[in-house]
Image 1 (cartoon, rainbow, N blue to C red):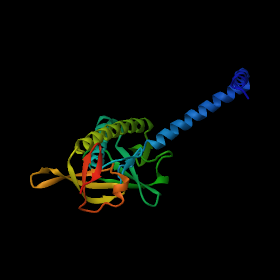
Image 2: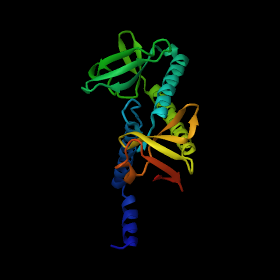
Image 3: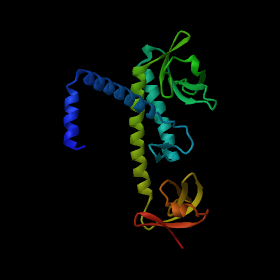
Image 4: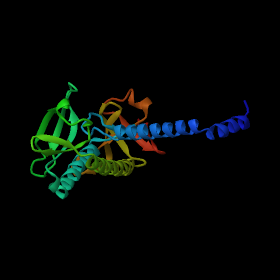
Length: 233
């Protein structure tokens, strides 16, 4: 069937009221599910081991910074909206997948962990949601959740950019690096040309050549040149 014929057929169908209604319903369905999909994919478990966000490995330095910044975001918002009630944030799920861990977002209570069964929380409550305590019950705050979600995601994007700049600054052409611990595609390298007093600066490298990673042993040395690591003899 030619493209012209297909276009003509589609244009004729658009004139049909039934088809117009169908297209409208289909559009609404797709929009709703795309929104849900986006919301589900927006949650990032910053506590996960070997953290990856959007297929991007996050080194421990920036994972810790993200966790601290998330606390600041939650505490600042809780302080600004304290008239709405005590604010809680669902930040983790227990290994049995039946309970959520919540933190109290007030600055003097942020170290307190509350565990609640999923069925005891409002319908729709999930990781990354903001709740308020009203009496003995929790209320799901959808607007607050969307605001916090946006703030945290923007912060994460900025931290990923900072990580890229940080790692690029540590990959210095002509420098010799000594391998140490490796795990899950990550490897600690020590820049032998960049000593800080009596210590040698360590770098958690996440873009190490796979062919070298498979055979690298502690103490092996590599040189960074022409934008990549090579075995140094």
